[in-house]
Length: 289
Image (cartoon, rainbow, N blue to C red; front, side):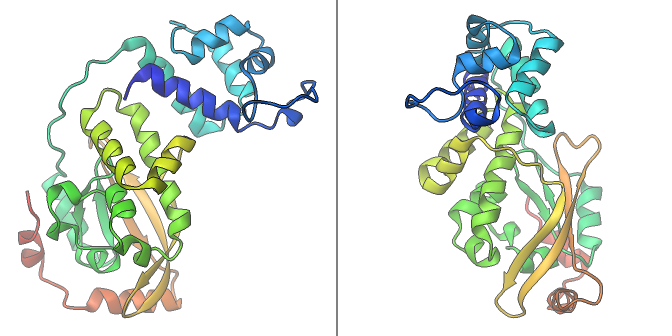
């Protein structure tokens, strides 16, 4: 992604989301051409000149002090995730990384074996939300990514371009923006990544929903929570998920799903896991390189 453009888009989106009436600044009665704060208002709240803030928003500021950066974060009312994202964008804008074709991403054999040994649904995600491994129960819960072409084994692509995603996720309208926001979060950490840029472009062209969510520039950290799933045979389930980042995995993570003990969802998940469960050898043979 273009570092300067990403920084500009993020700052513009954050000031556009702020209600001027809640900042303590005097608000005139004239109409505003754009929603949220103007550049001069952000500059006033941060205690910097309009020219300085304008250069920052254009990615032309060079080195920025910790004091000024903190003041801008406060003026834009950024949360923890947004603060970290801004700092990454500022760093990228100053370093101008050279685009390069990254090597194919694969999960370690030991991690794949661990995922397939679990009775609970489990998946391995790559740094661009690639599905690098998926066990038997997760295939029944979500989809059989092993049976898809390599290019289609991506959670973001699947969520927006595969009709099955809207069946699997009863709350698709809630999940889809989170997936787009999670990919947005990844984009800053993987500056000058042609594969990621191509992925985003292809999904945006094919899915107006994704294009809209991407333009909103929301961020999301897929760490833990609850998701509702629907399976055509057992019905709807409410499952907790936990995301564990793999040490040395270069952006890879393991996601495991579970149900509350004694709940109807636990019984449905048990039934799902018992269907034609393959042996470890059979399941391992289905993993494509």
